[in-house]
Length: 438
Image (cartoon, rainbow, N blue to C red; front, side):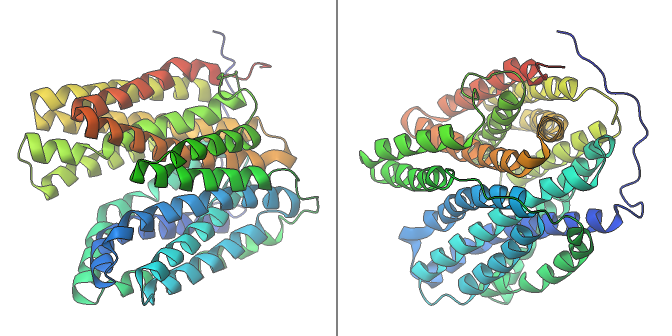
């Protein structure tokens, strides 16, 4: 394989005057969405019991995922046609509306509806961030801003669950949602100066909405069918397949070189990461007698490894993104395999293994983001960014579902093998991220 290195160019500071407000605004939006994602989980059991809605507990999470898929598609086309300002600001407003609905919900049905509105808002707001990166930052600065975006998850990952639990315990679960609302204002205000200069005029792409509806409805039907062991799951799978074929880059299923493989790899890596992470606490607490808090240390260490890997790749803006993708995918696969081995040897072996897996994701994830933007024309930045978000969400959700089904049927070992295979496929495919025309 021949890799053409990018020229060694010293990237500008992310806080230099042309980029300062954009960097602050993007970081604040990521922190906001990350804190909501991390804090809400600890309040969810309290909310479900208070609303007598334990049968709908899983749907409080699934609703966010399903609505977010639809919003990703809408936001991508909207950003390409009108610029990132409208979908981003609209997404933040819708996100606030969802927080208010969930925080004041009188019944579990209303609560799940509020979570769906939250998911739609966060889905609208997330895609334009990639478009801002593409249109504001020069290519040599993009590894650094993507590293900063990954780093913005660190503090919410460390303190979000604890703060959410304390607020739910002492002030009530409703304030976990309502308390986030004021945080939206500084994030929006910081981005407005940047957004003013990014308006465009174009036409909204047609033919994608049917695919978006099929994707979201298919995901809902698949999850419902699995939950109820119904043939509806097959119909959901067919709708999902149609949506993916309509919305994702051609050749993704075949891992065609360039953009299709870059998008597919994001889903594979996130799927392996989420599928493994979902069952690490179960293995540590049932096989090795770890307390939930001690098992949580392992997960936190993986998040720190992710941030460290992102920071490291950001120090080499002139390095080949393909090499970072290959190295990161291989390191991640090695870490996931080591986690599977640790389930038979020692629970503490999981700690360094999961740090390695997280560091691998940290190396590869920003490299794939940079590659997708580099391979996207100005008119397709939003569309391809939405494909990345769809790949992330589908990959993690489907991998967790598949691994969970295998764990229920054959035990933890089967789930560990499943996620290890996904990680190995990603590592083997990584070299195909190279642009075929380079």
